[in-house]
Amino acid sequence: MQILHQSKVFLSVYYAYMVEYRAELILWVLANSMPLIMMGVWTQAAADGGFSLSAIDFARYFICVFLIRQLTIVWVVWEFEKEVVEGRLSPRLLQPIDPVWHHVAGHVAERFARMPFTFVLMALFFVLYPQSFWVPSGGGAVLAIAAIILAFILRFLIQYTFAMFAFWTERATAIEQFWFLFYSFLSGMIAPLNVFPEGVKAVVMWTPFPYLIYFPASLLVGLPVNVGQGFGVMLAWSALFWMVNRWLWRRGLRHYSGMGA
Image 1 (cartoon, rainbow, N blue to C red):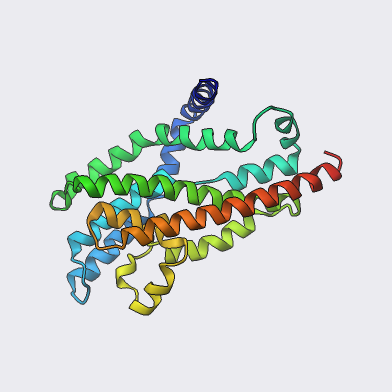
Image 2: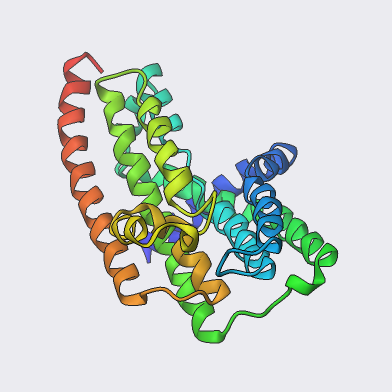
């Protein structure tokens, strides 16, 4: 019960903090509208033929990508780096709770504050393109929700692991920016993996990238994917990054305190 109470307090505090910046939230939502731009590119390409997906399939896929991006976006590496560099991590280490839960609460609360703007944009999309409207199957929707939750957890663990390098360098965000190059092209944000050569796709599907966007989007749209492999790979990568994160955290704390914090 105490854990539930603490979680409720954390979420309510960070939600109140997030809604103070409604105008900024709108800009954040619009800043992640690249999938809508790519949708226009790929639907036009599909109209010319040569792809296994139709223009409607591309439109539905990229509106799902837009939604998933809004639900799984993470920025913890920038916050953690600032805390370490500015020394603001020190007072949080005195609290009887791991500092990561501040970041988790902030991210989850921001989802609730962001969603109204996201749904307005999606509704506008379906008004402009009513032929693209569809209702996901019940089983597909349930699997997609589970995949989106796991995608957020995996994305958070990856970026929080990169954030640990802030104990040794003032530019941990540079690692995330380099990683983002691969994330953009291999996650399905720029193009669905269905358009990749089969050999390339077979290799990429064992990396964490496709499961951050392509896998949950495919479940929503109804594109064929290996569900068992998908969830198995997501859990395996999540466990690996969690172990690396805890190892770096312990070593980083010793280095941080050794520097006089």
